[in-house]
Length: 287
Image 1 (cartoon, helix red, strand yellow):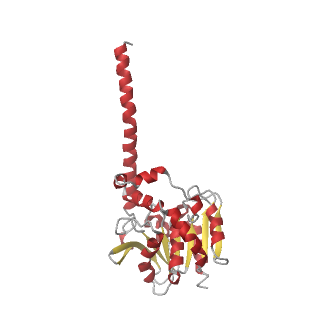
Image 2 (cartoon, helix red, strand yellow):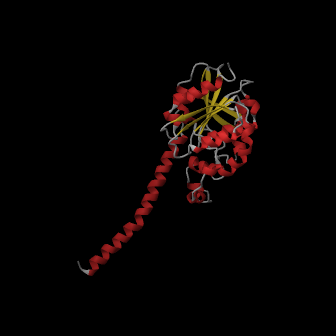
Image 3 (cartoon, helix red, strand yellow):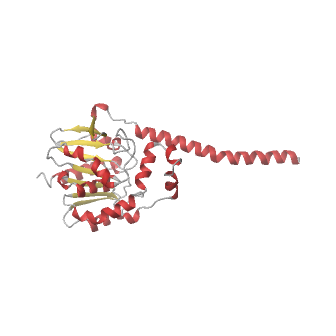
């Protein structure tokens, strides 16, 4: 091959090498946008929607089941939405009122920005909790929803009947932050991220500090607790179970459901076990 043709070939390869990373990033960004839009558009029937409006803020909820039954409020992780609990809304157990929540910054809740402070997350649920007129709800929290329901039980014990922690991330020692997350929170980068991913990252960055603040207060929880966790959870390690056993007061934990071989996505793979935990918990204050 003449030297001029070889030179052209080298130049072309260099151009392709420069373009490929840009194409990859463009493809990744497009995929993130599509995935985020899929999460942000609710697929739940709108006649299930019950917005809770207080102080100019809207907490979007979806409700089904027995209106006079035991309220059970399902809190999603991050990112996520009330859609994560579609099975439970579609299959409410007899005698229960099922309520799934879009947490602030997700789904149909307003404002659109998230709440990185765990205390503010707990406070955002108070208008909903107060609406049950003395019927203290059971709170079910998955993943980040686990420490949120624990925070509610600490801050507003008079409003909570019991909590079910599903694959809950309560142990600060196993929480880690990746460099890319700090980059994603920088002005300029943050604005181009889809809302659900932006708000999720904003919640996760201070999570370890929030859990460290919550740790000494866990012993103050007096309502009954059920813990459900899979042994093969790669996102929220199973060691969280031992951490909760060590930090909750004696006698508070009513059951620990160890799901052998299960991963993190229990609201989709272990619905019957979660319902069993809710039913068991309800017996402790509704004999």
